[in-house]
Structure formats: C-alpha cells, structure tokens
Length: 371
Image 1 (cartoon, rainbow, N blue to C red):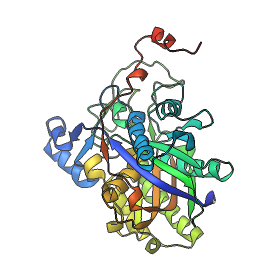
Image 2 (image 1 turned 90 degrees about the vertical axis):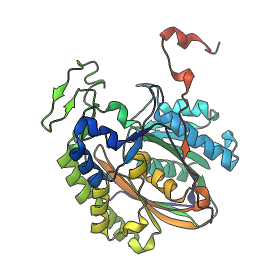
Image 3 (image 1 turned 45 degrees about the vertical axis):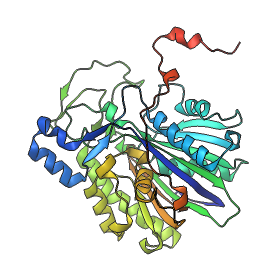
C-alpha cells in the first residue's frame, strides 16, 4: 500500500484563479435541446463554467494564483526551492511549463522546476511529490500549480463533455514548520484504464492525424484531437475504487469521516460525489461544492471548492481537511492536511496572457538570447 506520512510540513497558503468568461449551460439548449440540457444540469449540478481566451493557458491562471501567494505572504522568490506544474494542459509540447512559471515568478537557479503530467489527481500526486522532496532535502518552501484548460480539447458538439468542463488554475504553498503538523497520503494507479479518458491524436505516437470528424458510438462527434471519455468505465471506477481508497485511508490512519472538518474532493459531477459520500459516510454539508459555478475544473477543483467555501473566512479556523482526486490515467489518491482559513485566499478572476510566450515565428526565439 503506497501510504506516506510527512511530519513538520504544512500547507501555508492556497490561491486560485479563473477566467472572466462565463459559459452558461442553458446556452446549449439551442444545440442540444431543453430536455437534454435540463437532464445534464440535474445530474451534474453544473450551471455554468469559466473558459479561457485563445492564448490564455492554465499556467497563466496558475501564475496569477502563485503570485498572489507570494504577495500576501510577502515572500522573497529566493526562498522558494521548488515549483511543480501538475497538469495535462502544458503551454508547449516542450519545454516543461514549470520553467515558464520559474521565469515569471522570478525564482532563482537553485529552485527545482518540472512538470507532472496528470489531470484530476494532479493535486494529490503533486503534494505527495513535493512533500517527499522537502522531507529529504533543505528545501523549506515550495509551490505547486495545478489545473487544466480541458475545454480547449473538447469537440463543440460533444454533449458528454462540452458542458462539463470548466477551466481554472490554482496554487498551493508547502512549507517546513517547527509546529506539530503532518501530511498523510495514499496513492493508486491502474494503467489498464489509460483509454478511459484520452486525447488520441497530437502526441508523438500519432503526431499529425487528419482532423476528420468521427460519429462515435455514444452519438457524439469527435476528431482524434478531441477528448474522449468512456462514460460507463469512468463511472464504475469512481463509485467503486474511489470509496475504497477513502476507506483504506481511514483504516490506515485510524480515522473516520468524523475526524475531518472539510472534504475537498475533485468535482467530477454532483451525482458521483453524492455516491462517494454515501458509501464513505461523509456528510455532504462538509463537502464544499464548486461545480455549480465553475464546472469540473480537473486537478484544481478540490482547491477551487475550498476557496469558494472559505476564501472570505478570516476567522483563523483550523480545518482538518481530506483532499481527494481521481480521474484520467486512471489515477486516484487522497491526502489529509490542516490549514487555517486565513490562508485560503479569495478566488481571482483574470484574463491576462503571458504575451512573450505566444510565439508566431521561430525567428522570434532569437530575441533576448544570452550572449
């Protein structure tokens, strides 16, 4: 069992950012019909989401969130020993997007930067990775940036996905502390489900396939560049494997749902969350829901939900929180940590783009080279 305990490491700040552009689900009634859209809203709980503009990326939103943490905590960028970008929405095929964040945040050359290619479980795996690194090094502060712009890979007439996904970026600051504080995590993976959620084209196995539109067996149109979700397989995975990992975590840590103040879970859809809560005896009133406002925001969704619930709470309440992420891979996991509501910052709205990163010609790359 891959269970981890990290002592004297705490989450000392959480921030999140979403685009200003609101996409209302009811606007799809013209495309899919009123009955279909109403059914979707009832089952998923999604009323609206946010979408990025053409050149805006997840790292733009993640940068906004990370910069907010640095500003509010009055940090010197030289203090930050690591930045990890965990997402399936990189800026480029190469280099890793973490290097873009490293530059924009003004980090020093001693700070480690790299990407983790994960989607809805990226927060869980990212926190475990950073905590393990800090546990065996002299790194005292590190930033994790998570999120996705999944809407960019969805076919506009795919009723299974186009109303589902929202776009967001979030950042989390981890810090070594002398206080009594620990993070515990349990991670799982099953590569047999790699086809459950996939964008088949555009990677190096099938770099430039034709962009023909296929009528898929579920009745939705897609090209090989679009996201494909095997709905039945994903649903089975979420309502069986996810509750099991939660129960296994409870057993391994000697806790129950009663030991936690908040459950920051991936916002897959409302029906799935209710099924998970029912099977694990988690009270729904302790599980913040952000689906209605922001949609399924992939790996950022547990943080966006916590921010939505507590971002304006300056009471200093200590929340013993259980975080859970699950999805593409398939990959899933859970970790527990305590955080003060004073360190959960209100959601930011931002449409800014890192213009330097929008490259229209290879000759632009010669500008600003070190001599």
